[in-house]
Image (cartoon, rainbow, N blue to C red; front, side):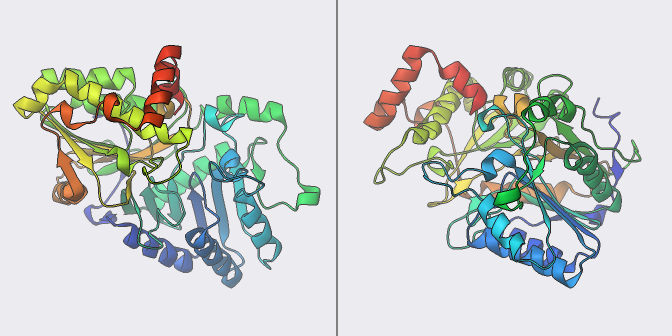
Length: 437
């Protein structure tokens, strides 16, 4: 499948690695300021905080200087309409958008996309920052921690691609399958005249989105990039590509995921490759580097159980594959750097094929969320060393596991965590939770 998979031809110098959140933020601001025709941004959210307001202000400034500039910002509808978890009152990000646009002489479009009728059933996890003929791809959203506004950051991957055809293809998909759909609505409407999508349109939106695809003039030779999009279990091109990447490995796989909870098909493919003697490196966040981790000195809430659930999933996997760890076939690297968090996703196969994606490679991503990714085919080997360098950079703040017991067991967890996890086990709800979290 992968050898026959067409893509958009790329010159060796068309790909650039930004590596750090500081470079990512600076490049975003520079690209916003220099865009001449269009800016399309797709992210889970644009937060009402210092970094979010700075990006929004940059977009409005660019629009004011060039009123013909086509600016579209896509965020998840439900995420934008609520406050942060645990925050009470009407404090969603849409209030920021509404107020900013009300005071703008040249408004921009900020669009809420309700992939499903409820947030826990599926969200807009589409990624991409498209400026004229430039695409910046990252799993990051827009807020203080992703853009390292202060001293704290959430580590992600950041790639810049110069390709007019890729940029056009990604814009076209957004226009055809999202912006023009009756299920989406503007998040900048005045409160007194706001019109939201009909419920039946939102409910049927997922079936229309499942047909979404990227259109482009395809080539099967040379260095190229294949944009992929997927929603749901059936005929999901992105999920199928992930499986084929893993199954095609002959020598080495390098896998990044923030939360280790692979879908059954992916877990089986990984296990099969280990038995075939393929070396696999998995870089995953330590529980303390999880978005939802709550330090012991702070007040605990139920959502803080998540990092511990993911750690138990990783511990079970490592215990089953201890033989591969001892033989050097399986290297599990735990990422941890001070009080920062980890959000990397993607797969590299035999130093020839590289998937950069926003997908967490877990059951929720594979079945519920709208996801996309870019598959880079390095036929000439021009990018090999740069990807190896990126992997070395990713491993800077990691510790390799030599035994599964290096991961904590349930018995040493805080009492509040043990109480919730034992209750989940008694109710046999862990299977369901793993599919939606």
